[in-house]
View 1 (cartoon, rainbow, N blue to C red):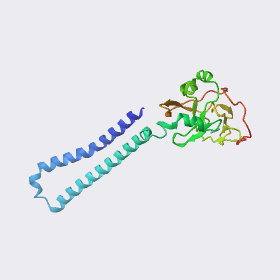
View 2: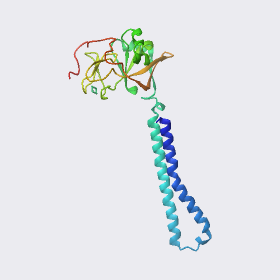
View 3: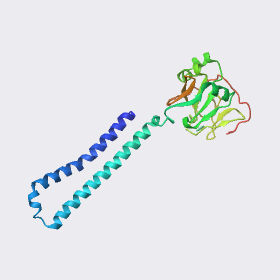
Length: 233
Ligand code: FES
């Protein structure tokens, strides 16, 4: 089900929930019209009961509608994070030239809004063009990689291990090179990625689509760590 279909269903459910109250109200108005002339003859307590019932029904109706409306808005807000420009949207990370100078060699930068590490791709661009995951992420053209922080084993956040210059997951010990390539542990593949493009000099990372990481055995750089591991399990 697409987000648009889901939002439409919520809106429809809100309208349908209102129908019983609308019908009760209409019936009440009809009855009131038919006996309007007799109403004055009713005892005061009966008239008060009718007024109270109407008031309660309308109150319940408005409360239900308000609740469903809030639920629908919250659902749309949840399903469309791209409206806020955070994770799930295209993120402008900054000037590509500045970032290229800032990142240097094997010093990833974590981008909290996008939940990814930005790194410079190490390796031959021609080789990257032959790896489907890298091609999909535009690594061969942009020269950057946006690596999703979420471990592809069971989803823990993977920190950067400065001594080894690898990403090392503290949960079950999966390890990945600076290019996010699988090196060790139970992870089934390399770190997932996002597509990176340079538009008018700005680095744009599209976090709306997660690109599955390259398969195990992909080695474009750094087959061994540079120093001690942070996770030894
Ligand atoms: S969640 Fe990272 S190794 Fe298991």
